[in-house]
Amino acid sequence: MCGIVGYIGNQKASDVIIKGLERLEYRGYDSCGISYYDPNNKKFVTNKDRGRVANLYNQYSYPDNNHYAIGHTRWATHGVANQNNSHPHYSQSKRFIIVHNGVIDNHKELVFKYLNDYEFISDTDTEVIVNLVEEFSKKLSIEEAIRKTISLLEGSFAFLIIDTENIDTLYAVKNKSPLLIGESDKGIVLGSDVLAFVNYADYYYLLEDNSFIIVKRDNGNFKFNLYDTIGFDLEVPEKQKMDFVTDELGKAGYEHYMLKEISEQPAVIRKIMSQYMVDNELKVSPEIKAMFTDIKKVYILAAGTSYHAGLIGRVYFEEIAKIPSEVFIASEFAYNEPLIEPDSMFVLISQSGETADLRSCLINVKEQGYKTLTITNVGSSTLAREADQYLNIFAGTEIAVASTKAYVGQIAVLAILANTLSKQHSLDLVSEMSRAAVSMENIIDKRDYISEIVEQVIISHDCFYIGRGLDYFVCLEAALKLKEITYLNTMGIPAGELKHGTMALIEKDVPVIAIISQDHINNNTRSNLEEAKAREGTPLIISLDNTSKGNDDIVLMDVHRLLSPLVTVIPAQLIAYYKAVELDYDVDKPRNLAKSATVE
Ligand code: M6R
Image 1 (tube, rainbow, N blue to C red):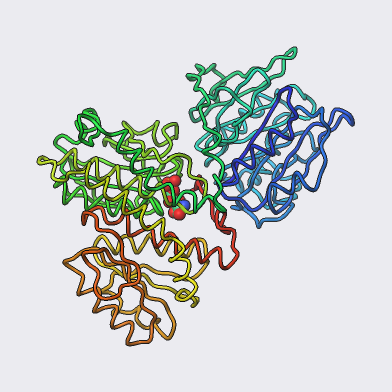
Image 2: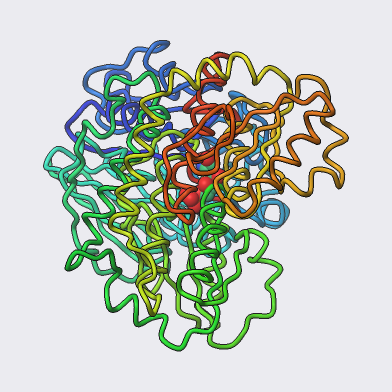
């Protein structure tokens, strides 16, 4: 979702902003823009439009001596993606300029109450913020005007504000949307994600909600002050070292991040094993184990791919740890809370650790006094910091919008957690996970074969994945992968449910892909596939060595039944990838989607 970057320093500010925005591209966006101070003409210049960040480089030139700028990638919420709605936005008199990430729920009421005389150029809620600052600055200092504005805003927001009459100061506010500060002796950079700081900061600071930041150039030095939104000083958070391996952020020779990340999955499993290995066993820490003492029910909350990992986690909690569990989609749980059983606790799963739907659940259940554990790929994220404890999945930065390696990382950590909680340590996870990593490698090595299958089989506008039990949960993920990057209408269906309605959609050439990794339902799923074949659907079977029969299309090396999702998902990821490549779509940045969904 929207990304913001701001900079004051010695370096060419437009470079810092545009490179930073490029690093934030993975979040998903449809338009972008920059405002910088041009000292030669003594004025601010704004370039913005629908389209890619690269256009900000290609279509404009920037003076070498520009040292103050803000920039934005916009994922449309209020108003279509066009130039008018792109950020930065100016206040009516053009004195103030803003970039904003988040949603202001009460923007209409605020216009009605305070801004009747203002003309709005865009359809965005953001223009309301900048005009409120302008309106209040008529009677108050700029800082007070911003504070008063914040006190009126309802919703989530992180924004940067330039006062064009003061080119030595940049104002920033953070509440419920991400914003961090990066620091080096060459300047201060602000951004929605630490990735925006790579090469431009040596250290970074994580900010709490309701922070008001004032960045100043002062005699060739750069510093920031932190306040709460009332005006009291805030303690500066602990400084974190930027320790990104820049290589990790490149494509390492792969054509797309998604293929690179698919290929990294066996390594992610091995990394997780090395991180959780204690005395030759895979375990979570005693503190995390202790959280589950006397817990009678686990609620798992997540969204999208992480929700699909959560469905598998529920099976692990019940089958391995013998703790009854339920899984909820975060945006549903947030506003339709079920009756929660006493002695329950919450496990939140999120690759980014920033998903707004999940955060609103976290705030809610914490207020009710429940224990919370986040499973995430980003240890510095909001959900990691705000839950009682967190478990890292160590997947490394995931750039492609379509999540792949985070999914297997989440499943592996859920298996380790459940096995630690099991009284009998029922799984020999060290050998089973090692075997799974080999099986994953095996199919990734044969990916050309999958690309050939895609050409022959996935030729219709619809596609169906069918499976039972754990296989069905993988079908849900498989369908999400295919639809999100190929825009083909795809569904994951419990195999036995096909005949209860969806079968009406099966006709000649419609692919029906069965995932069969569980011996006890092998024949049942095959019968359901026969029913689809009888309606001229095109069948395709993904099975394991020990469930394969005759000439199944994709046969994977055997793994433990419970760990099969780690392996069966891979051909599905590859099917989605190769189809998107064949259709010539932007694989890593599918239309309309954001990597990190920071609005509810
Ligand atoms: O960062 P999160 O895991 O909380 O994100 C949740 C979903 O938005 C995410 O899993 C989404 O469904 C995937 N990008 C799809 O591939």
